[in-house]
Length: 459
Ligand code: ARG
Image (cartoon, rainbow, N blue to C red; front, side, top):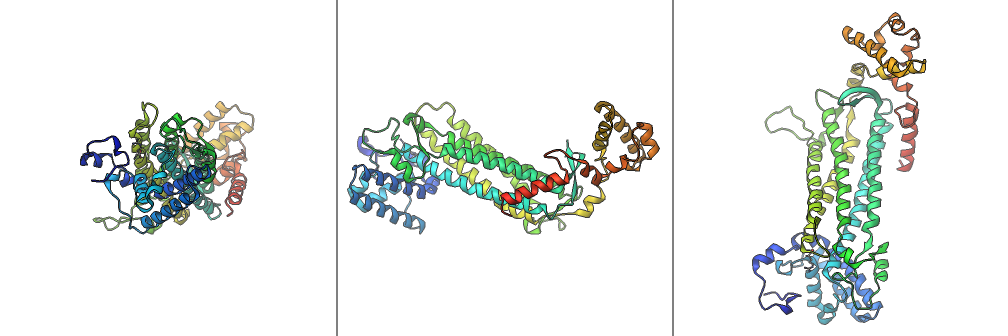
């Protein structure tokens, strides 16, 4: 029977089924590096404040370093009876150093230890995801010069609406990812607060220095209320939410590109290295990476829901329920990281089918709104202009032609101020050139923004 760290009060050994039910080491072993780092900082503070000696601190540091290597070399024995990674590492240290190791848990509870380890893990995960977001932004912005002159139909309600420059599409996604980055940075501020020193829930009677630990671990602040921080998983929920929004953005992009790569749209050729075939239909080249990016969003949404339901109604302070926070959080971070890692090369490697797009760009009267705005510029009230152009579109629809194919006489009949100038705004190319507003798809505006992004991303 394995001796438990808490066995003093117990007269009977734990039921094996309970050990299996309550263990977390099968998933929290991922926190080993964070646990060792935080334990070293904790030990150094204990030495600094005289709670352990400098020599004891050295032995602890050395022992923990050896344990780290053992874990990394795959030589470390994991046992269900020891519950979690924290108990494993402490036990291994005690096996090496005896009473010295038995001092490491001075002024510390697993409650604040787990929370601190997890905060360090989330902080690292945020930095990692942020770097992947930048990679994806670079892939989108990197396409802009190549696709500068491509005009795509813009859609609302999935119906052709107005012409849009391809780089305007790419920058739309870049902006969404930029908000995701800002949300990560904001979330990081609340993650980056030290919980250690809250001990079990009320703090400690021992003369510790939490600010010293915070400095050693690069935390920006120290949690002000031990009771609050022992029960706090807001930071985990926030991170899971930001990850969910990233997954939603990727899912929108994936859906759009799945449509664009269909025979029906035929706007896009995906790199074959990112497609898979069918086991029965020899002709198939399927966009599975995009489909799974869309599909895996379900997991990420589910994980957020799991965390929200997990903390609902938990009384202060620590409750064992909180052990259930790690799997959904790890899964969301892993999933989003993987999706981002595949998205960047996929975005860079796809080809717009310029000829196919151009050939069909005249369908859908993408220039109707531009024509209406010409009427407004000529002094016609918007509602009147809308009606006039609506009727012209009806004529074009009946004839199966473009607005630009209607005659000068037809335009003048629709409104006396419509002279030869109409042809200057008709057709998707002219319509795109007619835009002027800030943030619009006006070529000069898009070029300015592409340049700003290229500078920002050092491209
Ligand atoms: N393995 C647990 C977790 O990850 C740690 C248990 C902490 N505290 C306790 N009193 N049982 O949350």
